[in-house]
Figure 1 (cartoon, rainbow, N blue to C red):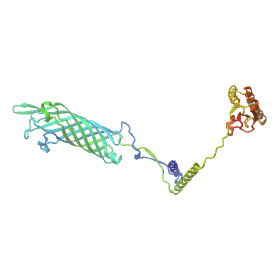
Figure 2: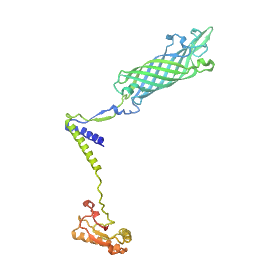
Figure 3: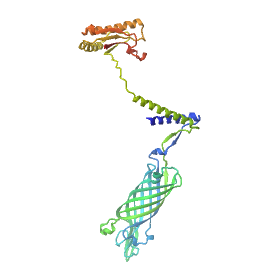
Figure 4: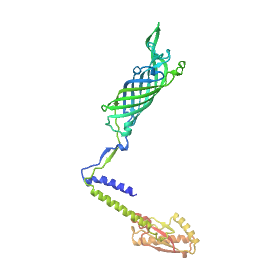
Length: 408
């Protein structure tokens, strides 16, 4: 309770400080990143990415090939969208040229026009297909979103599905001639895990370095045995450019900021006085709760009250039904007596009219009770010149009545 009162008082002081400290100051509104960020429209925060680089494959037998001869080109193009400062998605086409080694001369992708090395044959494949990644901006996650930041570290993970192509050879005498490329009728599934180091050049353009690890299955052909079917791993590095489309920043919720008063001494004094007043009220409340409860004096409410319209003393049929029930109670208690008091409001009419109404109202109730068999000895009629209801003229209808009270 006390904390709630103090917060309410502080809020009132904050908005009242403008007039107290400097009349020309106003409440300002600023974005508050601590409140989170608002979602943008679906058409915002899209981007297009193109990148090119090199990769090295690590699979069975590749170590037989010189390292400098194992690098191959790779390139990707994507379209993506950031759904929040942290989470994004991209999808596009990925292409990579992969160099390897094989134990078999007739294995797919073998470069038949190249000399073998230690009994192994050089291979080269070209993979192309769709790829999809989910991206997480680590910099915004760890350091908070900042629209002017020049560097962002982004990790991503996803999948790719590749069609594989290799050089097509025709045997010509004791040699082989290359004639374009042929499909290996193979579909390769690959995982993707990478880190993007993005550098902002302008509001629309980012340059980046993308380092990726790709585990992927090899061409699965039963005729080449288990050696050829093993999973390989691919390490890639890319340089790329991202073009941001539409709105590419995020807005935080707007909150009011109260102006600083020129001198806070008066406010501190008010706050101190309020805290003292709250403490005093809490002490008074506790003292009140600790006091013994006095024995209550019970005032008997009327047994029944009959209400009338203005300037009326006759009983309605509903009133008679009520009095019939009251008469049964009275006859069941013949040793008790009852007082019938006639009332009229003092806001309308005059004393003569109101006195007549009071007498007639009490007499009408007495007559009806006697008619229902109540002995007259149990009944006493009287009038009261005051108002039955103490709540004023607004409730004048409650003053036009006859009350039936049980005598002590």
